[in-house]
Image (cartoon, rainbow, N blue to C red; front, side, top):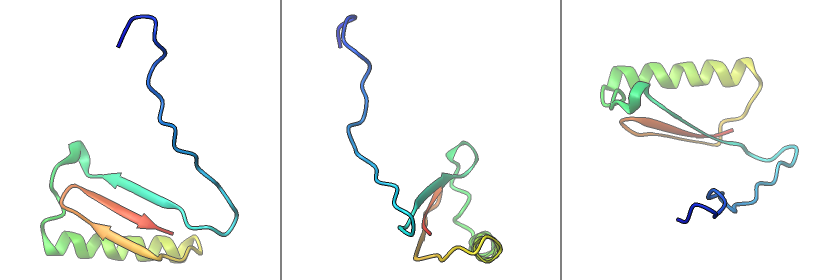
Amino acid sequence: MSLNSPPHRKLVKHYDEPGNCRELTFYCYHQRPLLTNHTWRGMLSEAINRATQRHNYHLTAFVDMPEHVHLRV
């Protein structure tokens, strides 16, 4: 990259239409693999269920990995 070139920007277009799903991704603290414990994954699932009920969201997809989570609400 030369000194005169503009900074890299992603060219992905996002469309924010009312009623469409939102994709959310979040990571554990310092991206540590904290979600390898069945009990902790269960606690996370319960917290997500409470949050979706409280905010009247509909959870359509949910994937947890050792260090991060993907949600579609």
